[in-house]
Image (cartoon, rainbow, N blue to C red; front, side, top):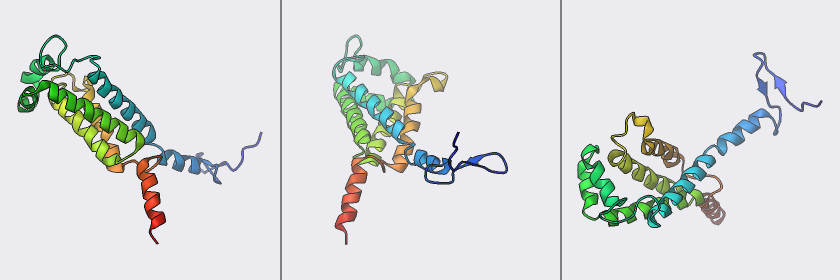
Length: 179
């Protein structure tokens, strides 16, 4: 059985001796580490936005059973920032459409990798606003998903979308044009 360039170090750890070795594999995995997160957040946010627009779980109406207005009234007193809920209650349907369109924009932006940091910042702000309002009273706190989504967006805010993205493609075109 051939083992290629795999070598054991003194401590027993395997190291790669060539481009196909473990070192190369670790470097490749490190470069592509954010792709699964991009796909997950992108698909989830696009789905959530379309779900709102099509009346899936919450209707974008000011009042009535299952409406966004009813949801906001129910979380107003338990939110971290009731004034933020009051602001949204001035036009619950408008707020719902804004959140839905924002989710779709952030999701598509991060999936395609177009203005990746901006898309991630938008997704993080949506998650932050939902955490401070809708899921703030969830106990224990780790049952609320909005805080986890906020934390998931942060690496993409910091790193952007440097691989397999429109941002990378645009950057390579700019480099080709620059003498």
